[in-house]
Image (cartoon, each protein chain N blue to C red):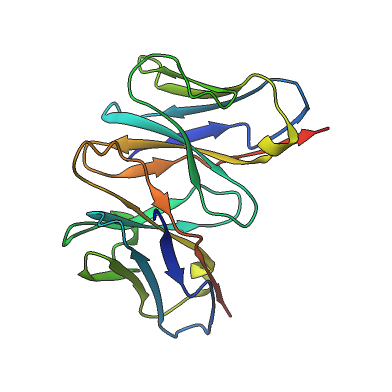
Length: 111
Length: 115
């Protein structure tokens, strides 16, 4: 089955710093890719999505990069602020409707 | 309204007892999922319904059952809870049709503690 590996599990940065979270997947049938954000006590919320090997910026200070050749997905935060502190999960969708998640990254942004 | 509701939010169960968790959505979504989430682990796909068709993952096939009496409701049933079932259970839905990309709408979860 699909294996989604997410790194790092914990990430602590200063306000204004950049941050990068990366996921790798194994199944070539994965074709839709997502990043979810979970704030303490809240449900997972979609942050960004990407479908092809193009760079997409949703205007929230995040950029998603997808490399299907390397089966790698990254979430890039250019200038972190304390409100970005949360857990982030990548997810990959298969053509059979199965959706698999990474282990998550706990991001802490210090003032 | 893009809300997925789960009940109960917290459930305490004894080992060997059954557990029934409920999920509802009013978005007319065709597909509903159940995930098990343990601390520092990925949400683990347990099963999903596409319309009335139930798909259960092979490694949890015998541990969890589900029913979907109508489009809005989906339950997760554990016949005999074990300590290893203690986890957060996440319900999610997605349209399933009409250009759906696969974005999931999650409930807040049901935290199950088995003693």
